[in-house]
Image (cartoon, rainbow, N blue to C red; front, side, top):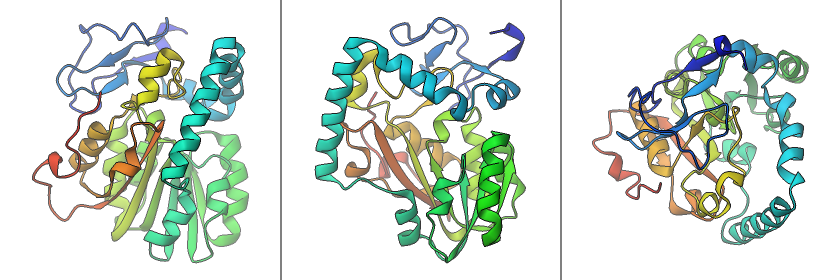
Length: 291
């Protein structure tokens, strides 16, 4: 990639500049520098593509098929994929596979609901009729498809980066916000969560699903772990770093139990709401810093 289209980032969690720190060489591909901040432990891509590159050629709809084909081409990966599938099936015996639309229906009051990184709007289409579907999507092609779906229900789709679009809605506008497989792609996760805190109603809920970098699977599979996608996935959260970033952005963690962040699961789920006051300590939510 042209050097002019690559941007440098400080740590998204504590804002430390780690330019002189070593890369995580066991995971980093040739073109992208994966760093673990020595101050807060957050793992992130330090070098990222600019917005234009992300929107035009690195959006999910452009990269998923190629990534999946390359990942499954190696015989060793086929074996690892079967192991991972068995682990996921075992996890679902402990907890039923969660669905974002069902969680919104159970936790959010009727009204406007936002899907950040909504793609073609498939998730919004599943919302019950008491909700008005809104979306933010970086890909113009996918946003156009989603817009045709939500227009009949009084909603709208905005074509813009998530961190920007979340700040464009009136304060307290949404009863629910969904971030499913979005926050790991966001170059400005702090600004995105601050925007969500502002856009949520007082009793609104934010539901986040992200890959769990602290999982046993990442240690087992190494650089072939399904949570690694370069440069699409820019942020690699553990339970502790996800909860800390939420609380620092004006959100209170409402649900984040052990079953929501099982160490054998590739993903974790967190439910948050607007904070009435700044939490006294992160330890009230997560005490195990799994890295």
